[in-house]
Image (tube, rainbow, N blue to C red; front, top):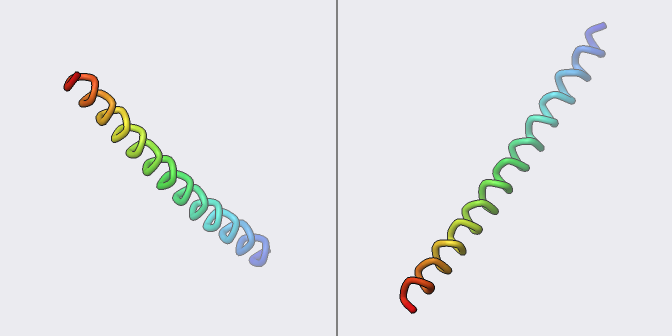
Length: 47
């Protein structure tokens, strides 16, 4: 029984880790997109 619990805890932990990696990746991608949009907006305004 305890080994099954350990497996569940391990899977949840690794899942949480990969989820955090995924979220940070998406956050960085969103920041890059926002930065690109701001850059486009500024060049449009300068024209």
